[in-house]
Amino acid sequence: MREWGIAGGKGRSMISIYGNLKDASVAADKWRTRAQKRGYARSDRMLIS
Image (spheres, one colour):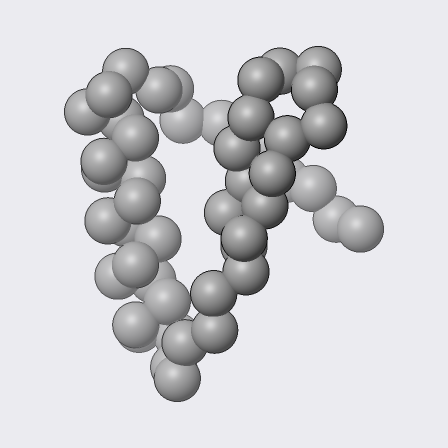
């Protein structure tokens, strides 16, 4: 699950389904690297709903 939006706002989320854990991990790393290149900082916050 990816989440994005303005802090304090409603935000958006998207769920992607992968066939195995390795593919999901590779995709997450790709998005994280892309965001960091644009200046976003890593968040250690974990949401459980």
